[in-house]
Structure formats: C-alpha cells, structure tokens
Image 1: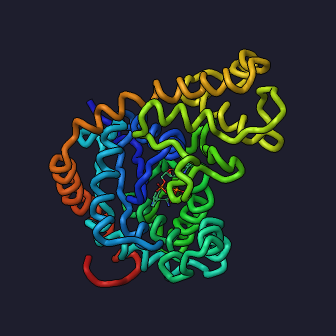
Image 2 (image 1 turned 90 degrees about the vertical axis):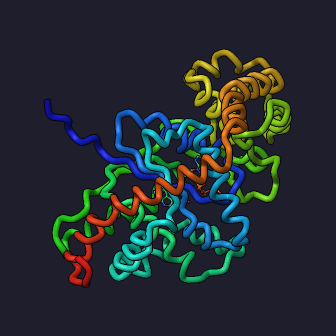
Length: 331
Ligand code: ATP
Ligand code: LTN
C-alpha cells in the first residue's frame, strides 16, 4: 500500500497575550480541525512579537501561555508540530535571503505596517520587514496551505509573489502556498468599535472576548456590545456593523446560517438576540477553560522543547536546498 504524503499546513501566532474570539474563529478553530487531513505545523512567532514594544521576561511567559491556550483549544502535539520560531535559526536566515528580493515599495504598501505606525509603533526595519519573516516561516517548510484570518490576506499575497520571484530566478524550490480563510468570522470586529477588528492590543478590554473568559464576563461583554438605535436585527455591515458582527459570531458558533438567524431574531429586540449570542459563545468556549486549567507549564515547556528539536531537523534539508540554489555556503 502506498501512502500519499498529506499536504502541508503552516501557521503562526504571536505570543502577545489576550487570545480572543477573533483569533479562535478566524484561525485557531481551523488549526484544530485540519490536523487529521494535513501535515500540520504551528509556530509561536516570538521573533515577530519583537517588532512592537515588549518586555523580555513577559515574552517567555507569553510563549508558554500561548502554547497552553492552543493546546487547550485542541492543538494536539501528537498530531501537529508545535514549536517556537526562535528555536529554529533557519527562519531568520531565510528571511534575510528573501529580503534581498523584496521591493521596498511592496513593503510600504502593507496595511498592517501602515496601521501600526499610524498607531505610534516605531517605524523600524523589523516592523517594516515583518511580512518577509512571515513569508520565510511559510516557505521554509514548503507549506501548501495557511489557515489565517482575513487581516493576513495581503501578507499571504506577498508570500506567494516572493515564492514565484524566487522560483523564477533560482529554480523551482517553493510550492506556491494558499491562504485558508473561513467564510464567516474571518474578521471578527471589536465589540466597542465595530468598524475595527477585534484585537489583542486594543486597550479597551471590553472590546474583546478572551477565549478563557468565564461565562459571566462573556455575557456582560456581549450585552454591552455597541449596536445602533434601529431595533431590527438584520445583516448590513455598513449600516449595522455591531449587529452584523454579532450575527457572524452567532453563525460561526452555532453553525446556523445568517439568514436563518435573521429569520428568527429580526423582530425579537436586541436584548433577546444578544442573550442568544452570549449563550452560543459561552457554550462554545466553556470546555476550553477546563482543559487549560488541567495543563501544567512544565508539560507545555516539554512540548515546545521537543517541537523545536523536530522543527530544526525538518528545516535543515530544506534550508540546504535554498542555500544551494542561491549560491551560499553550507550545503
Ligand atoms: P491582534 O491583531 O488581535 O492583536 P494579530 O492578528 O496581530 O493579533 P496573532 O495573534 O498572531 O496576531 O493572530 C493569530 C491569528 O488570528 C491570525 O491568523 C490572524 O489573522 C487571526 N486574527 C486576528 N484577529 C482576528 C479577528 N479579529 N478576526 C478573525 N481573525 C483574526
Ligand atoms: N503575521 C501573523 C502571524 C504569523 C503567521 C506566520 C501566520 C507570522 N508568521 C506564518 C501564518 C503563517 C499575524 O500577525 N497574525
């Protein structure tokens, strides 16, 4: 019997705390679901987290905690490779190589860079070249599919362009990876400013639901979510961004279509609708809190240690192939 190699998945998360419903519905739920049918590699991207202000001691704590949350959500180290980016020096090396073929103009057009600098982050080389390191993460392992939220779409396009540019110049080394973005809830919006995406870094805690929040906090946050004064529940992102966001959240957590939800709640009033959304989210997230509590930091550290060793072994021959193609030493 021949067993065909499964297509490979790679994705990353920054160890920057506050993992929220948007991260979960946009990306991590897919990370978990895809583990059986794909060869899955999931990475805690701590080198990326260094591109904004951070505290070195916090970074260590966040690395462990992010891995713990992922494991609580169902990322299974038996089926997926789970490790930390800084354990594998080949990521940074490949980023350098790809950087030599990345036009400055392309990086200057990245909306995440523009948003972050507009918010006051230092416009340094690390933040500017962030998408090149992301491309290196993906291409290093020759990934085929990348489960991410909608905000990473532009970075994925750039990754595909870089892979093509490299292949044209140095020979067919990289498969061209594709983004895997969910149809609903690819962009969960802030509960307080529904024109912005729900974000870890939003100073207003009320703007998000953390995946580990308890039931009362979840209910309170959804009840106080910003909506509008017209009492009809209907999907209209422009006119009713708050209600549309809640409809997406409820659709993603119950599996019911938005049309179906609108048919039921159109005239029920916002209070009744919000209670129903809150219960759907509570039900979805409750089991993860239990599992999170059952995991020890020591176990998580061991998983990451082991994952780092395996990732280095996996990366080495791939990186040698790149070195050979571009004509540098060490293959
Ligand atoms: P944030 O913007 O929330 O501070 P981030 O997007 O910078 O976080 P990560 O935590 O590394 O950084 O993102 C993990 C995954 O979650 C990515 O695939 C990202 O696309 C996805 N994601 C982030 N925010 C949302 C959102 N509001 N809705 C859907 N997916 C999201
Ligand atoms: N840029 C992503 C995190 C990230 C990533 C990756 C995602 C870094 N490397 C590789 C997918 C594949 C973010 O900000 N969410």
